Length: 201
Ligand code: 5GP
Ligand code: 5GP
Image (cartoon, rainbow, N blue to C red; front, side, top):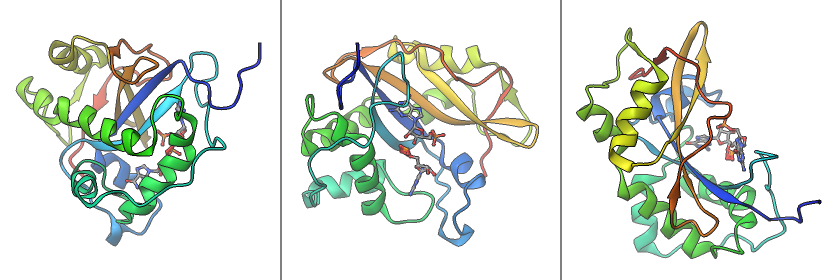
């Protein structure tokens, strides 16, 4: 059957490691904010057969968020590439949030993302497992997944970017069910290969 616009089966909650985003960014360097903690990239409604869909649905227009929520998102969901936080949130809403309105209205979409970010501190989880950003060390995919899984009890997905011959950890994905409440195991699709670096710049 054909999926109608905006239908999703589960959510990917995507956090990024800002040093990797910045290192491979094409935006002007002086605008980069390579923060040393995982921050939100987005909450993406997804399905298993066509992973980049749904996107850009015909949904509600982005509205200004309440000031208290803005303060929380400035910490958890900064635009680390170019420093325009509101534009980043609006872009994520337009591309992904508009496709999740069967589950979450705009306020819920951003509130829920913040509470997902708040519930586990990936930076701390990795530090406690002695996985610390390094210019030279690499880890096995399973080393990083195990450390996170010990804390969350659910399998995350790791996504990487290549910088020449080095594979750098870029995103840690948590998966949630249709209602964006219950965390579930992620499938390992298009994830990092083995030997994952985590650079601090
Ligand atoms: P990036 O390489 O920046 O993580 O991903 C590029 C873009 O592809 C993302 O911003 C996102 O819009 C889209 N994308 C990649 N994987 C998925 C997915 O599993 N689900 C959805 N909805 N979009 C995805
Ligand atoms: P995907 O299209 O859903 O959300 O988002 C992909 C875009 O998000 C990519 O073009 C990627 O460069 C961008 N992206 C990732 N991190 C940031 C960020 O911190 N700020 C901005 N403006 N874009 C970002």
